[in-house]
Image 1 (tube, rainbow, N blue to C red):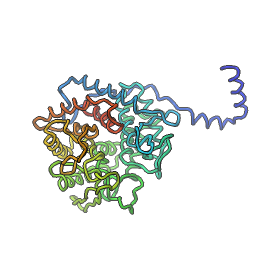
Image 2 (cartoon, rainbow, N blue to C red):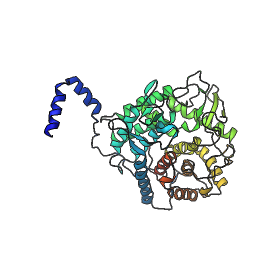
Image 3 (cartoon, helix red, strand yellow):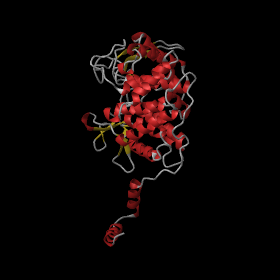
Image 4 (cartoon, rainbow, N blue to C red):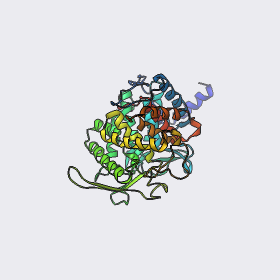
Length: 432
């Protein structure tokens, strides 16, 4: 230490109390995670459920290399330092009102980082930093949930939450526990269990176990019986059930499959598509209760296409598809089969013909004839479940189409869904 620096140090120490010093140390000290190797390092080459398949026109090592290459580019662009010691967040990239981060993206980043451990030797440090940022932005009413968005300078927009972001963060904590254990400075399993309980308490409608839009929806709210279709994540729910023993997650799986089956049959019998938002959900009583709901109208919450297959519902084939790939759920397989038949027919088995949005009748939305990885990638995950003639060739085409696009050509949303999709498509996505 330089002599002048030493003098200033002694002068400061003379006026500090031991308690004050301890407090400063507590807030500034960021413990490094123990140097424990991941238990499930990338690549994992998981065994998918019987009948599911991955692209087979290239060697598996090439699939893995494509994931590694895109992850390195994705991480460099989107993982940013937060405003507190040891914090990281997923950059929202040019969102409205100078939005810096949203809980949806934070969840994507935490899932991706946990799954890429092993290839990324700094994955645990990065994951813990993403966790610290989430915990530094608690939702109003329950600090286990995350405030849905932050502006520049890490300032919360408000204290409300978004259910999809919270569910991905909770799922990532179970992945982190499976990857590194829970004996370090962050008790991943306990944090995950606490968050799962908060989601069930604050973000699930206990009348029919659909998902609320967030924690601000009360029983007297006009949208209390409404949901975002892409918030149904049955593979997540199975992990939550296993981690907590709460049988309500099993009920949520059954009730939402019943709802989705109704929506497909009633509003999209040919294409099998779901709308961005589902409204006025109701269910009868008994062992086989009837269910009723309607697609949202235009400008219900986000756009004129709120009742169409648009930028929220485009994730449904991915979320539901995972329940086939990991658990072999036959309800999910039936839903995916209908979507697969329609998308292959309407595109004539050409990925370049996939549009960025459809009506529930399967008609392309006007002026949406452009590439959007957030639509293409989930259709590719759905293709992994396609057992019909030509299904493998269709999947192979989709893989080749997706990997040819460079990161700089798309935004955070498309690139993050592509990143998770590549992990799934290469057979490296596993359940905790």
